[in-house]
Image 1 (cartoon, one colour):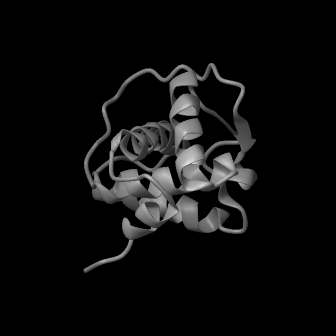
Image 2: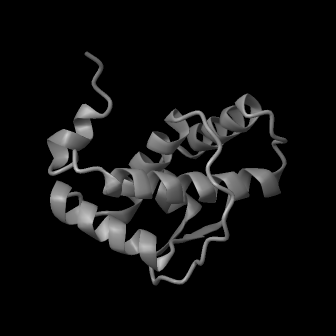
Image 3: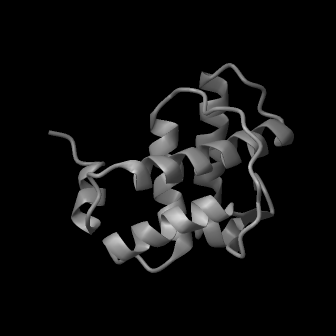
Length: 126
């Protein structure tokens, strides 16, 4: 378990609200999973910024991961190793939060995503 609780920033909450409306995906955790994976795919370091956890959107690690807790642990460890970062709990938690926020910003910032099909097309290779 990378973190016990995940609380989003108000900015991330607003962005996810727009994504929920566009895609029809009702659950915060599902969109957060997409956002994290989209950010990790970038294989670059997210900007090291302080993230205000000031929204009322909060979920446990197990709500975020569902049945795939070990998978998300492994994804974060592999990403940290690829970035030549330590894999201690503090580093994993920090970069999990940074990647989650970056992924939410990326997904909501693109004009490409107007419905759920556009979101699905992110994972389809030509």
